[in-house]
Image 1 (cartoon, rainbow, N blue to C red):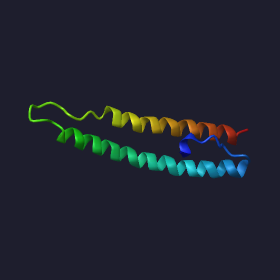
Image 2 (image 1 turned 60 degrees about the vertical axis):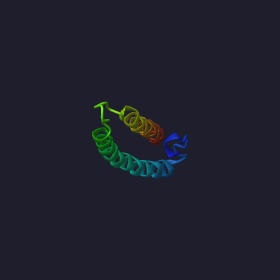
Image 3 (image 1 turned 30 degrees about the horizontal axis):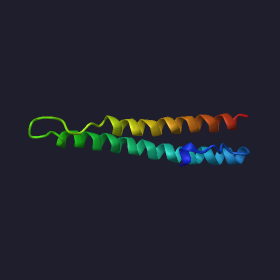
Length: 85
């Protein structure tokens, strides 16, 4: 997985290339955030049982997206550190 990569670039051009790729990944994560919110909202709305109990818990779904965002932030931080070395 790209977000778990330990490759931070071996030279300036490599680091700049990784920063461009990372910007694309961040854009994809941002788009997915909107989808996660929409799916979570719709699932919650349609998951009430006949007894009135909620059968869908969106917490795990939302936490997984948050974990991806954290991985992305860490990778960007490490690439930027490599850029300024």
